[in-house]
Amino acid sequence: MATTDALADDLLQLAIDVAREAGELVVTARRSGVEVADRKSSPVDVVTQVDRDSEALIRARLLAARPLDGFLGEEGGRGASESGLTWVVDPIDGTVNFLYGIPHYAVSIAVVEGEPDPQTWSAVAGVVLNPATGELFTARRGGGALLDGRPIRVAEPVPLPEALIGTGFAYSAATRAEQGAAMAHLLPRIRDIRRMGTASLDLCAVASGRTNGYFERTLSAWDHAAGALIAREAGAIVKGAGERQPDRDFLLAAHPGLAPELERLVIEAGA
Image 1 (cartoon, one colour):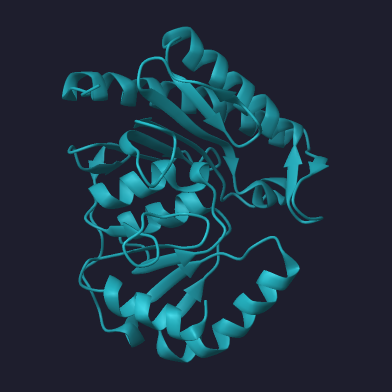
Image 2 (cartoon, helix red, strand yellow):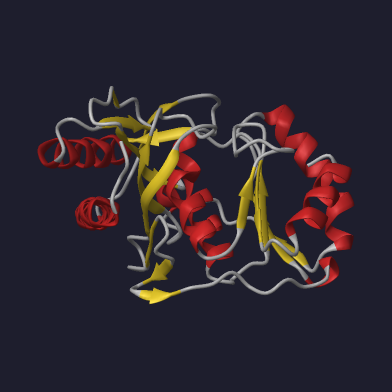
């Protein structure tokens, strides 16, 4: 299907409304205290009951409004699409931050056209809400990126030694060891590293000029679906390795004037 601008606007507004409702649930639950409900790929890859409750709320609201759309959620929610559109959802991105009460986590909701595969989909609209601060990043395909309703733009390129770069580390201990070693090569060649723990917000930091670039390995589709669209609509390149779209192997986001040099450095560092 070909999504019109009018439909894209409607989908974006639905995502905003649902993200805000989920955000209220998440913030209210955090005030009452949070415990680990389960562990996934490793002892540090945790999920809370609030993650599950947030995803259930989001899925129910989207299903009620758009019953023919598909659904792909981090906490196991799956549903095939009859409309050609699929919602890709991270109900709490940055669960470890959320668990510890660090006010840097997000509700991330995107709607994509085509199969729910980052290599082939076309993102239509995306929302990343930080419930702890209230900041709302949004984008609609071809409509630019906004922070709290105001246009945002990726920072102008700077020399690599002056670039502030965001990243994240994997849950696997072996992969984290490799990434830590790579930092020793990378750090002397850039301004500094920021590891804030929420991929969707890291992409929005590039979109809003708060960092000059970002890269990470082992991200899932729901980690970057909304944030990647927001960064692209703000003028960034968001890519995987070589000619690929972002995938679990690699994601990089930066101004087009910085991205190639940053990618070469990251590859050289083995990061």
